[in-house]
Length: 142
Image (cartoon, rainbow, N blue to C red; front, side, top):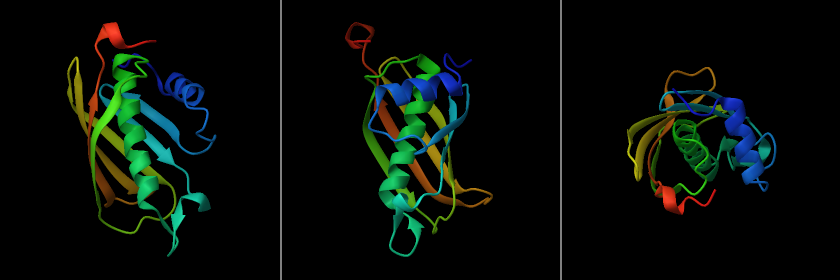
């Protein structure tokens, strides 16, 4: 059972990262070791050729992983990305949906995968694997 619901999580993330503009992404759902995050289509995320840029997709993957972890363990804001690998598979257009599943959630390490789809499509446009370091209780600084 998640410790934070989608609305609580979105509020915490927007308060903790004020440089992220409203509307950049939206957390649509969280479940046990799972988060779904939407990146709305916006021209600021495009690259030449009118496709969503790689950096926008990497940010989305990282955000989905962070959301899944925080939903599961609570507001441990000092959890940090230690690795992110991404494969771009087809040209994405429109809103992008990222679905993150945590494959391992330990006391110090989390590993997950993120499948990204253009809204309404069944084929992935990108796939990422992520690893996060979770600080020990004594170093969380919350």
